[in-house]
Length: 198
Image (cartoon, rainbow, N blue to C red; front, side, top):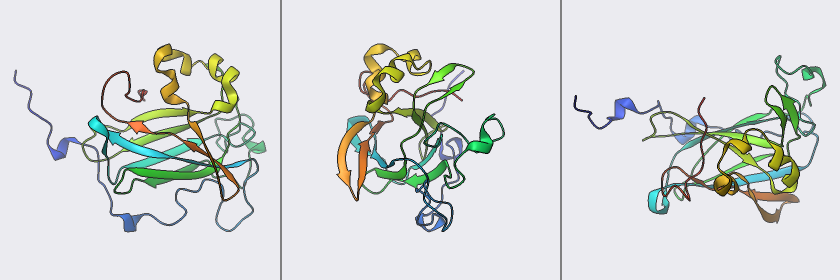
């Protein structure tokens, strides 16, 4: 049996022009014109690249996370009625010509799920031309070293690669702390971002 190289019909899609996205799609902190979300506002930003650091243009990133108290406005969360009504918890960004993306959000809270006590984190999905399916990863924060060390999902990643899932503090801008999280879709195993299956 001969395996052929994937064609454009085999990659995920469709993909939309930038005009499909609206300003604010990458802001998880506000619902319409209501009050801002509770918690510490942060900017999560980074760059998506492939082998040899080549920038990935027009990649779509989706982020979802708990609010600052570790709650989700979702029926599966037993404390959904206590979730911050001003926090969307989901957003979408896209990469520019240099592969850069950014999300405005709040520093998430930790919570418990079926796997145990989860460290504060943001889930990211990356989609774009050339990917056969969406690539999913998780961003942890350096503020929570003890919780990160005990997180059951982060613990699944080989110890020498876990640092690839922890964002770096990147100063402040516009009154917000900034965290940088770069994503390497494909490359040397020591440098590639760890991804998780659905």
